[in-house]
Image (cartoon, rainbow, N blue to C red; front, side, top):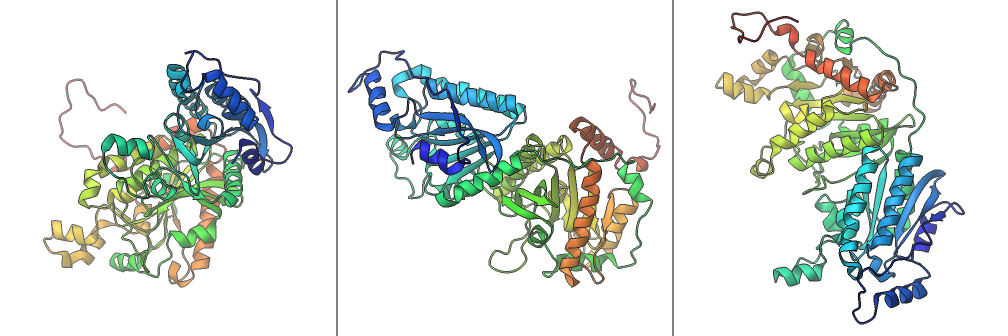
Length: 525
């Protein structure tokens, strides 16, 4: 698709203003293959009407100002040379200066061989430009079209905050022919295809060409900050909440049974009933995409939020255990960082018996993936509101439970271990799970009374399953109330308050004892 047509399909009519249009490449190497390099460029200009492989400019997309860079494969294979690199770097600088998103559309066979090392180092130049853009918190949306190989893919095209592949795209480090010739092995038919990229966590989504403009427009709408509601400071949420703990006389084991029931509303219900305009993001950018963890943009009363949650499915062909793999937690951490760069609050919906304990998960370093998710959430400079909507089990649940507020639905549970596991280890009898459940203090009201949970979200009489729409309304009310209190606080204040909140957890139960302090320690403070 020619660059001009691609631009016309994406931006509002009459809004595109090109910059860098007069830049043309020199011939730093005096390169000649079957024709001198200047002659090749002249033929490409005559054939395409372009001066270079990349066209850059400012425009509006759905009424929102953006900076756009589009590569045209018909100009020397969309190769990355000194002019294209300069245009990309300038585009990033303009986006940063004007505080507007950068959108790139790549179609490239890689670095321009006729410019040799000068072209090679454009990869470093463009990577540095995107890194600076990221540090400045400017959103970057990268669109891959067929094909994107080598220098463009490894420097900036794969580094978008959100990466969208047009249906039919092939993308990767080295092209299929090069890989097969180098390795001497035949590759699978879907190698580097859009399905391959999505399955292996390299891209967030795949869109047919006819849907791509609408997809980019929705992403730009999330990338451009909306007017925020004014927040108000409140007292410490733990102490404020602990003063009004609701009563609960139900047997804890009954709560465990109920929260595991297939009929209890799960993430999919709340995603549809509480939020609007959900856009799912896929992939950990490293190895895979774990569907057990949902990540994406959505709106709550028109305000953008990032939703991250355990997508626990208890019935049907897509049924899963609710236990996430390392790829799921890496995806969650990646999207948390994206939310911070785009200044969007994060809402997590927790519902898992624990992280996946399989051998492959251990080989993929499940522990580090969970740890990195928790470390990321602890220092995120944007509001983080966590809600346990079902079963919260061990570190797999804790990974998505670190934030400015932790809420639990009234019939949810949260425990260091399953009652069965506790009974097997401490009582040497898994049949004593009900007794273990009573000892573990795992109900929402128990944790709220202990000051570990900030608020208990009411459920309809009989539980959330008795009236799912009403359960969604009650959850939405709680989210609105807490997010209103958190919005308007700057990042440094949020992180400082969150640190104090986490620092205080369990502190009241550090009882004085006979432990001898080290010589340079004392107990002041």
